[in-house]
Amino acid sequence: MSVTEMFSNIQVFLCADQDIREDIRKVVQTLEQTAREILTVLQSVHQPSGFKEIPSKCLRARELFCIIRDHIGDLKTKFPVEQYYRFHEHWRFVLQRVTFLAAFVVYLESESLVTREEVAQILGIEVDREKGFHLDVEDYLAGVLIMASELSRLAVNSVTAGDYSRPLRISNFINELDSGFRLLNLKNDPLRKRYDGLKYDVKKIEEVVYDLSIRGLTKEQEAVTDK
Image (cartoon, rainbow, N blue to C red; front, side, top):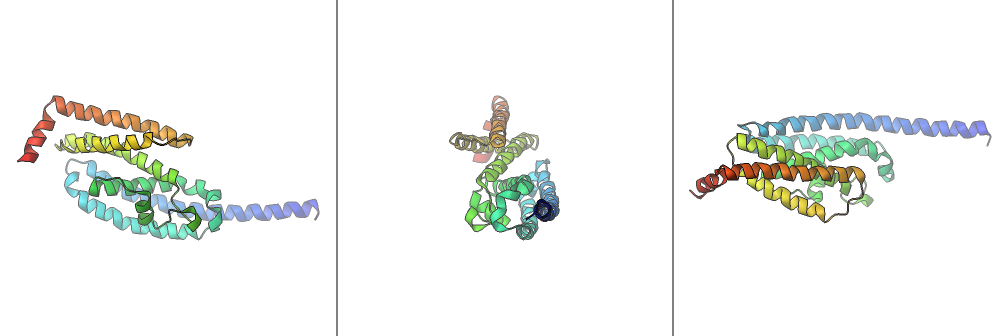
């Protein structure tokens, strides 16, 4: 094979690779758009009247996750299944984003931590990498950490809405989450930096709870609950 033929073959390969990446980018853009729609729906829970609408907003979000599953199903067809990590960079961010949204919905519904398996089921993907398009464990953890930041905001807005018990429950949840992350030896730099943000979320929520306690609002809420 001549040098010219060799480089011609390389060019064919590069063109094919670029075509795959362009197809992936187009699907990822639709994923991002639907993710923004879900986020818009869920952002309303931060409004003073939003807590009463949590069930309906979560229901609407789950309806939109059906569209997310369709987009991901389309994405799976755009590249060879064994080359997941070769193109992973294209959908890593949006997958972390929709993981956060799924985790936030589950928390709003049950005040519990969504499992990696549950997120995979919501998104219509696998957990095991051997089975194809899957939820990488680091993408799952990143999504959970994004949710923690959202909960710190929810704790503050709960006080504004007059819900003084919710920040206490959020505080307990976030402290448990922090304890869990402390068990991990995080070597992924972006993930470790995001975990550093969890420490600020813990502190922010503790300040909210402390402010409520010195104002006697936690006891007042407990008295209302007892009645």
